[in-house]
Length: 66
Image 1 (cartoon, rainbow, N blue to C red):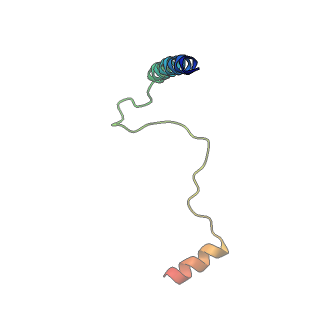
Image 2: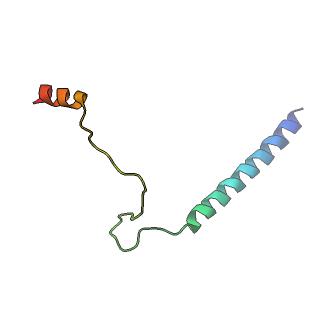
């Protein structure tokens, strides 16, 4: 019984190590978007960033905060 458990643990350890190595290799293959931009990643996002929307709650907050 214990030998079966040990064999299973050995196989699981070898499999997870192989998976981790393969994942690390695949991560290194992706091209970097940092190209002469002083570490700033340049990309495109279809989402528009909205920081503030005029609502009654915001007006109340700003009137109390001021």
